[in-house]
Image (cartoon, rainbow, N blue to C red; front, side, top):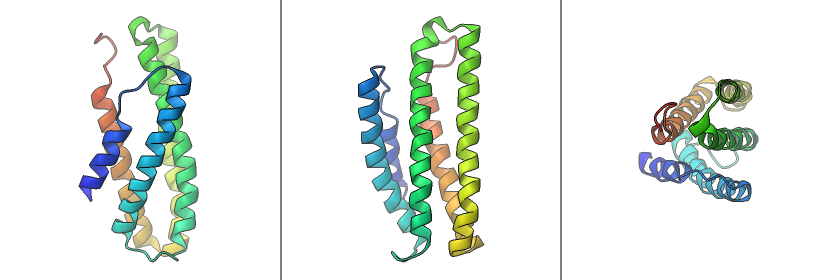
Length: 153
């Protein structure tokens, strides 16, 4: 399980670029590769049949999660662009955007937890949340390890 996740995380942690079209292309590539790998990971861990009522809920969740992750990539790129000459205003705006994005991911998981619980029960819903937290935290750690801290340049 962790081998597949590592591959997916490495794709997600590719160096970020500043050209807007290239960013969009990279996001599509990452989300495509990661979404496929992640789906396989979820299938393996959850051990649910293909016709489980969980899968439509999961797909709806993934659509919203991908949008939030796309926003995160744009925030990271903005951070990298502004970091060499970061102003108080920039730092404040970026911190607010990052916190809003984090809150959005947490809110999304909470919103869909109720739907997942209704479709497959509390134990399996808790398994899903546990897996999602693991995946998201691993991604965030991989990204954080690659980003310079303010004042490091």
